[in-house]
Length: 182
Image (cartoon, rainbow, N blue to C red; front, side, top):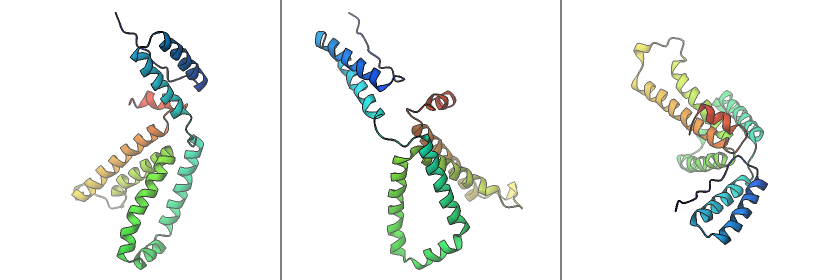
């Protein structure tokens, strides 16, 4: 006897999935197959994941723009930032670093797409910054500069991964997947 496998369709609306769950529950009452039970659990997870609040694409783009403006303001006023840092004792810096890590993780969990865009831009700037002096010469490239380029590339890849995760279950996901297959 061949086993039936029930594959949930991801590109359906929540009401259609709920209908499919009800239909499978009726089927499970008649034929208690483990495949049907697993499919019901998967479909219920899809509904649960799809009903979580997430900022839309526009919200993520706005968050990325606001973060970019803040980063630009910090960069343009870097002398003031250095003055503040010089006045903070070492213990303040030690406490601030884990706190910033927690804040960035919170941002990433709430605004994954925006975080990915910002991460990609920071990676580009980090890698390109090696080549910005007007007197740049490839023969003078130091190991530290190569490490900076590789670090920038790594940050870009992480950013693209976060962008892909941020686009999950959005109308832009098929376009993203047509370019980058996960």
